[in-house]
Image (cartoon, rainbow, N blue to C red; front, side):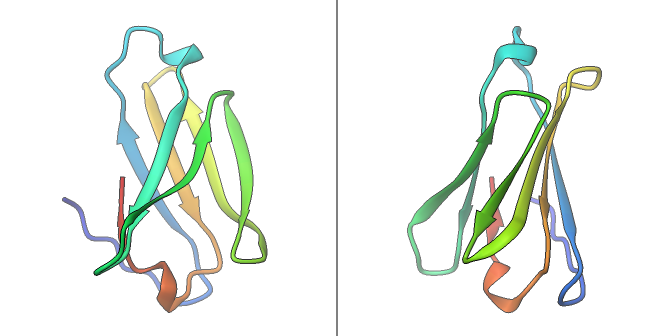
Length: 88
């Protein structure tokens, strides 16, 4: 488990190494769990990148895939208190 701290209104970047044989075609799903709440599906990425609105904010989340490193990255933009959670 990794802890990431950033200032409000900034961005946080969370990367995950994926071990799967067909990474290019795989759908990578991102989830989060806030304290004392159920786990919540945020988005998934199948192509190389995509943007998602969350909580009324356009481009709040950006998910991407890097085929060279088999890594998926979730960028959380416009950070606020309610973004505090465990991300998967």
